[in-house]
Image (cartoon, rainbow over all chains, first blue to last red; front, side, top):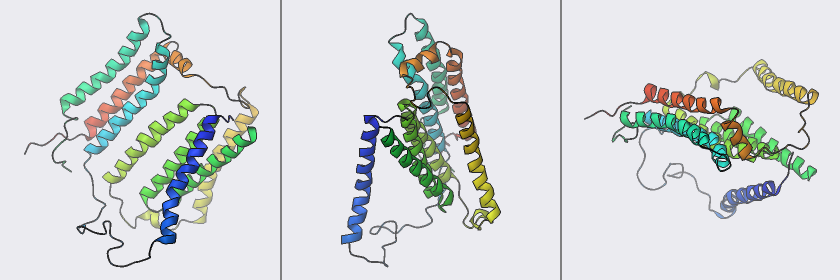
Length: 126
Length: 169
């Protein structure tokens, strides 16, 4: 196991984040007036009353966007080390290899674009 | 330094354990997912202790940043019926079996690591980003290109299966 200054920094931020989150909760526990009933348990205490359940089914299009994002997120995992090494590489071969990698992904992007994935529908059908 | 690393290990293990229990035990799916997020953060901390900061950051980027969001969307898409069969209290035998399923792999992995110790068991070596990149570009070049094909197939399959063309109205 390795303990570096990075770990110290993360630990400091962890403690600071916990204090930042727990502080207001503790403060409201100590200082805030208690009340119950009325609109206190509504999602919005003032404003319009919500109708229906919040468990609503969302359009499947959102899921497609999340999946595309996940796939490009995984790209980063592989492109990042390659990009870091690219400076030390020699010749045109690495360029061709990375170009091939990106080209295959670009084919996908063009296909989605043609299919209309990127145009946000005005009304998502369920 | 070794003791402080041990303390940090215990903290991360606690985060992982508490998150895991939260993910399993909570009734609300969203809360269970928050527990999963906590566990993934703890695992990322473990990667840092293993001297793999790149993997730790990628754990945050991919798992916490994308996979969890995907699961959130999946929860939003489906409607979990209240009072399903999971709500019934389980028998003790089920808990015992679940515990065994969790504990046994730990022992197997621990046994393997202890009997066949890698050279870096006490002081993990850091594999630099550039070394990783060189590995991807030179010896494992074919795998690197195939990754993009796999990602393309995954993306387009998702689009073909799930995407609904906008209906003109």
